[in-house]
Length: 93
Image (tube, rainbow, N blue to C red):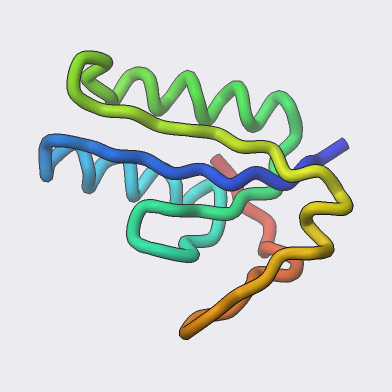
């Protein structure tokens, strides 16, 4: 069963930043520059984390994965520009 996640990152190197951004685009929807919403199975989440670890420098970069409960997903709010992704398209990682 899939779950929705908010994934954000802080990457020190512009090169690693671009690589992580490209990786994230294969798994989810960009909602801010370094924040993505993803609907993932546990296998897909593990794969994303494994691939991200290969790109990150653990001494300078971070990637955070927050699982949203179904109730939390239904009560998301947006203030300002943009839109809340309802049902993300299918992603192949």
